[in-house]
Amino acid sequence: MHSLIEKESQLLLQTYKRLPIVVDYAKGTRIYDIEGNSYLDFLGGIAVNLVGHSHPKILEAITTQCKRYMHLSNYFYQDAQIAMAEKLLQLTGYDRIFFTNSGTEANEGALKICRRWGNQRNKKIIIAFTNGFHGRTYGSLSLMDKPRYKESMEPFLDNIKILPYNDAQSLKKEVNTNVAAVFLEFIQGEGGLEETTEEFIATLWGLKNKFNFLVVADEIQSGIYRTGDFFAFNKFNIGPDIVTLAKGLGGGLPLGAILLKESLANIFEKGMHGTTFGGNAVACASGLATINEISQNLIPHIKQISKYLSEKLQNVAKEFPQKVIELRGRGLMCGILLNFEASRLVESLLEEKIITNATSKNVLRLVPPLIIAENDVDELIKGLYNALERL
Image (cartoon, rainbow, N blue to C red; front, side, top):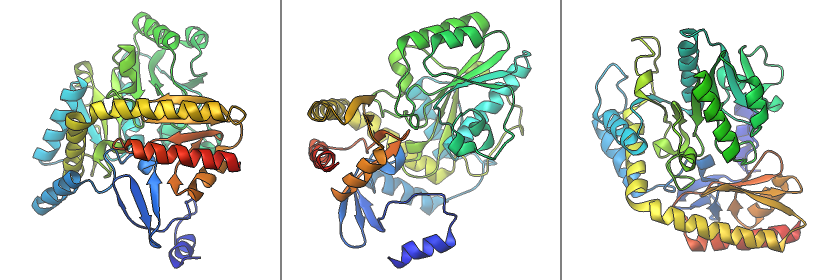
């Protein structure tokens, strides 16, 4: 056993099932261990490393900002933060932004906004859905039905209902004038890459128009062009009131955001909400370099490589009909539903020097850097053939 692995087991809370890799460095779509092995990264820091590892434009932006200052707090006007906000709102069409450190904090802030908005209108109920994942803080956990994340940690927030995902009839039955907000992942990252249906969204928006509640789109994993569009919900031609973002937003540094419509701009008075590190100048500089690189140079590539990957995965599904149930997801947020536990395939792929992970027990999740090339896809597909044959 390597000494770092042994020290980790003695020093840190054992909450992670780590891959047996001691990392030396990472570059592009590759991770290199201390023994010189190269791994193809189709996990991407769990959908974080949008433009790959150690991208020169991100490194330059971070270095430049660090030479000026690293942290001042939100008591100051900072050009890096304002530039990031301006670009993000321009790309998304939203009107206001609040920066956070992470996705779960973005959802906590959104939850506070919904509670305050609802209390002003005597609306108490917040709805979320089965198999959703919104983070690990108490408000976020309250929006989820996953026992493994919640066991023996009660009590959670009240006035929250968890309804079956994609069940339009359940929506019609449960939604009324008491509902303040609905939290929704348009593609469930942890929930097996299930995607919302046209019928479900049409029903939800019909009820929204009738009963006047807020819709919060959790785009923490699916946002920032991962599906080909900036948001996963863009395909439905609708506009949620609030959007939460994180993961790749900071280009590898901790950064999240709440995007809001102008109608919610004054929901908080000064001092009612805040953060010490949210919108940190270095993270914003890194984030701005990231979204500039994607929006200016990568969108056609994302659409092309997503199509290429989809076609190749379809061939895998046809080749192994006894093992592959269906393909899921969209763009570069995709996966394979298997008829066995996906962790076995993750381990088998690791023998091929390919990094992936499992979600919802039997789904192999693929969330690679958006810069992957056809040769990376070919390497993945070859590894999948070998791994599935072994299993």
